[in-house]
Image (cartoon, rainbow, N blue to C red; front, side):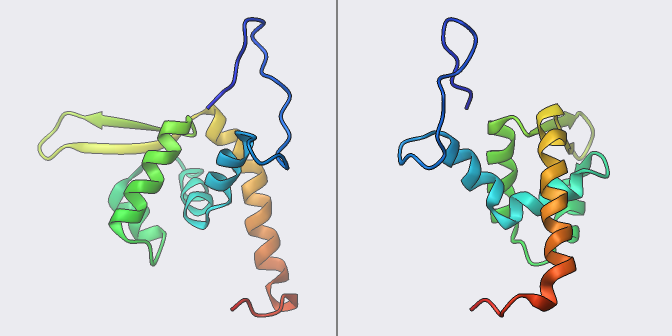
Length: 121
């Protein structure tokens, strides 16, 4: 998703502009399952089943889609270990670890201020 030019730097972006590619990244990271999956992987590499149990309420289909999008964007690495049955682990990349910091702050803020927030319907 990086927009590099010949100089190695990307064009200036404006997340408020309708066609800015930043919006795709913001959409991915602002998704509750992405934010929660990244948080769960802060503890280290995780198997799919563990992530599904940790993220109560996520369907296998939605978790698979979320992990694929995070992997495609470079936030998550998927490692397959040849065993019977196959052993697959998901782990944060350096980019994933860097975005985990502000997402952890957001999750903590929500938990700390939930009682002050009007019910969302």
